[in-house]
Picture 1 (cartoon, helix red, strand yellow):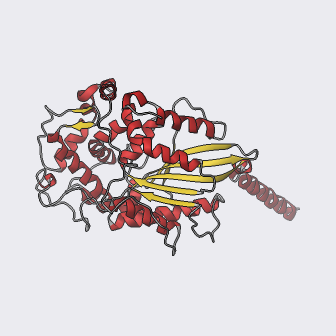
Picture 2 (tube, rainbow, N blue to C red; picture 1 turned 45 degrees about the vertical axis):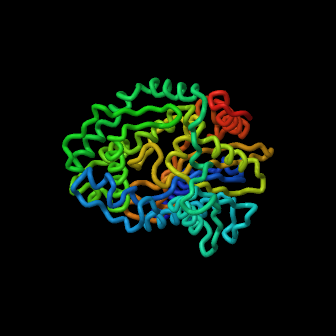
Picture 3 (tube, rainbow, N blue to C red; picture 1 turned 90 degrees about the horizontal axis):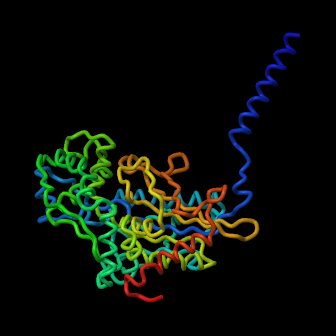
Length: 415
């Protein structure tokens, strides 16, 4: 009788265990309905050296010695290259899991596109992503002109447009609260940076920001912005304990410092006509890639200005970005456009921002399924997702078209 009770108890425990397992691993309804057919990635370059040289203003804002990044100003650092290779490897594993590629797949030009702006940091970022994505195989990265030449797809000019364009931008800045309100938003970061740099007084009396046909920030304020940029990059290279010249800062304080260097990037996203003007060439490329049916994977590598302006032009809703000190366009971040197809052949879009966490960068941690990068869903104003979190291809294409053709009269162009 006792043995019978023991056996019955064991059977009951096993049944409970299997029931819990079944609940922990539910049926994958999503993948029963959709298959992934194409992915487009718009990436910001990974960790670079600050923009300074022997006569740089960075040497005027503090007596502390800046970290030697080991590469020329503005170039991708070895750590940035390694982290981007990790990211490429992670994406390959993810896309194999989703069935877009097989483990044996080798790159074919009709399936794959890698394009970068013509600077070393963007080209090298794309090359190192491709190195992780296609280990042991060299995937060609296209760029226009010579290394160092700016590609207007990534850095289009906005000068020479009609006066109405400038007037619209000025009105948008005022709608954000104007120069003084925008300065107040970054005042905490200014104070923290002054403490870190051992410059107790930072005079912001005459500091202004404005946008007409382009962005204008007071020249006197730019050295501090560059210093905050350099401090942010030191965080990634050295970690928070060594990056602030002996000062110990909280994660929130690091976010405040990053907000100072991102002052202009904030406007690239939140001044609508400027966002559309700066992103129009890239939005056209994204639309063309979506219409290239044989394409499976597209990688476009540019800058924080590209991420911010494209998000602004697509009217992405503001959302906090966890686990990163940069809240506008984190280093190495990627706008990911996934096309999913249902059983009837109808296409849907999933949007997300993928980026390495600040701690992962500071520790140079490999990105894996166990230690993945952050992935934040992106939602568009006035476009509602279905029950599976996807928006229709028609809605997304219309949003791209609207952003591309809007402001034609303001810009003095014709479509």
